[in-house]
Image 1 (cartoon, rainbow, N blue to C red):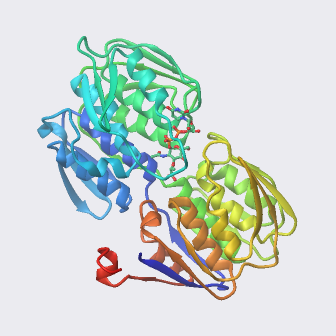
Image 2: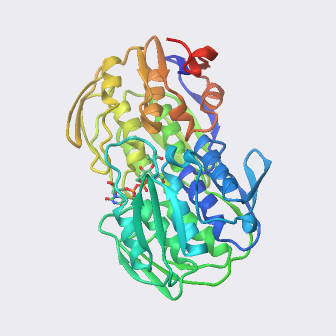
Length: 428
Ligand code: EPZ
């Protein structure tokens, strides 16, 4: 029940440093299972989803040392089981990367069904299809996924029926040490897919074509250790860019890869922001009212679904009517929260029609999931009056030190902790 208290109406001005990419880090932590020597990983974001992944690695028998807040050293040689038992695996989505990684190491894996943000149905049929093509037989029992390949994992041609980040990454993990060649067609092209492939290639894997829709993996027998730095978080960067535009601010977002931000930059420019790209920075300046635009989410390099709630929030107080299509997830539930702040949005299945209002008004709203929670923070920063954002633990799954970073930009925001008894569920 911890909440953020935001007094809106302050322009964000200054510089903000972006952390390492959550969705790359969670896969790379799991990928260390495949290494035959210790690995040092730098630019690891200090967020709860990553801490769950490192905890699960330790539960498998691996050792994880934090050398500083953002650098971990992992020794996977002490891992001694193919089974993830810890139930914290059910609290996040990315725990399913241990299936691919353990399958690659032991030709067998037992992992609890994953959890993660609730966007309705989140199927894993493409993961299971790929494991089966590689020689695994899959079963699901009492909340556990079991994949066994008694004759070993072998290369295969796998066509993904939908563009899926998770199944592409899991197939890479399972195939890296397989016998022969694996080809993934219709693969996801997200920057975190490329980062996982680059990490594994640094260890000696032979993965080509990551970042295109065809990935070819020649299995290798051994992977060495290495030092590797995770890419900057595209969505965290986009969120601060959106917050800058929302408050008519002037913010330089540092430690980013501007090419990963192009779809977000294009939409913010269409809305009237001025964006200057440096080598590893983007500066967002917005000194005019925001204009309407239409947005359709797509796999990379299209506009990311993980930025949809933030951009919809901006459009809720832009001039004119905007149409947002998001067919990737059932992700418009947070619109009810925005309506409490005065937004005028109607939702019909995977489409939202947003009639821009003059301004949002402070209210008590909930963070329904990680990105929807970030959208509520943006709404609060732009609104008149005070906004209370509840259930902030969802936001902290993926945004490192968000309050500190926003305060550094001049926001009036603080975190209010529920009394201990409330946090432990002992009251009422
Ligand atoms: C990843 O989820 C991200 N999570 C999500 O980010 C992100 O929204 C999503 O990719 C899309 O970019 C992690 O990386 C941990 P998908 P993932 O498989 O891998 C369908 C965030 O906020 N599909 O790319 O689970 C699926 O229903 C989170 O950081 C199948 O049909 O997503 C969806 O419509 C939330 N069958 C589409 O594909 C499958 O077997 C894309 O899903 C798998 C997916």
